[in-house]
Length: 306
Image 1: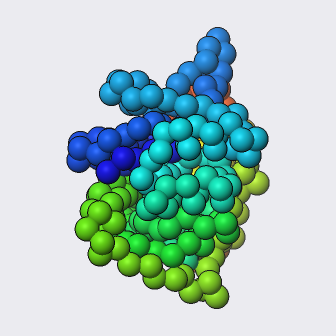
Image 2: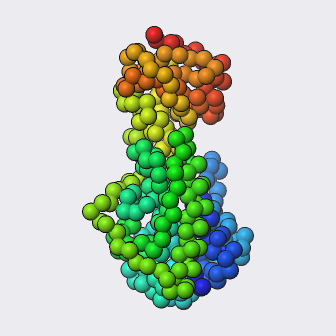
Image 3: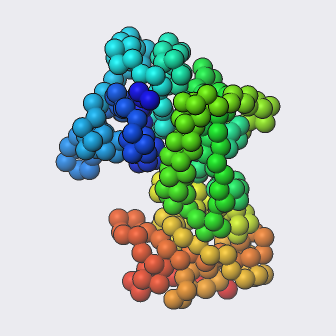
């Protein structure tokens, strides 16, 4: 099939790669404009652009989608199908309806749950034990189109958002390949979403970072996993803020929530609001590197409070 692909981050690369490997004709790739990176502010390609260039695919990086330029490119390319995976721009309806097979999206949740920008993170933040990917027809409303195909997977108890994103990228590529085959052979279905059951997964921000130790150990464990790699859960140690990257739920304690009950080679254990402890096993100090809590304790004094 002649496909125009639109995507930007690592998550989208797996889907584009699968389309290439399956022998589809990729007539073009839309991705976000190059952005300054690191201290030198040198313009860097998106992961999708890097892969597309390596495959000699033609890349387009329109600044806007509604000024006519993008539509003109789509009309010139004459794709049979548009595939979108984490592109980062809203497509107007005139573009969505240009290809004869329409436009489909690879979304990293089991719709209608977790529509929006950060479905993987919010599934973990909310303590879900199962998620998946949905291939849907794109519609004017955000992530509200009819469903073609879904694949499900368990969320590991200690799996963080970064690791889950990598797994769902591959699962999304598989689901996409199966959905495109359905479209080609005429067996693709259109299952309307139950809009009354939808939930929203908004963009993350730093207001989510501070740890409230009066919450349960499980809720804080989920907060830590859900906010990796950004903005990360944070707490105070010795009057300084640290980012928390890994935790383990510990034993029962009668200590007041927020008190440090242990600091040793196993980590730094805090009392939580549900009467359980939570041990920080990996962290990063301000201006420092990510490290095991035991390594942090070798250079920092942490006062046990009970």
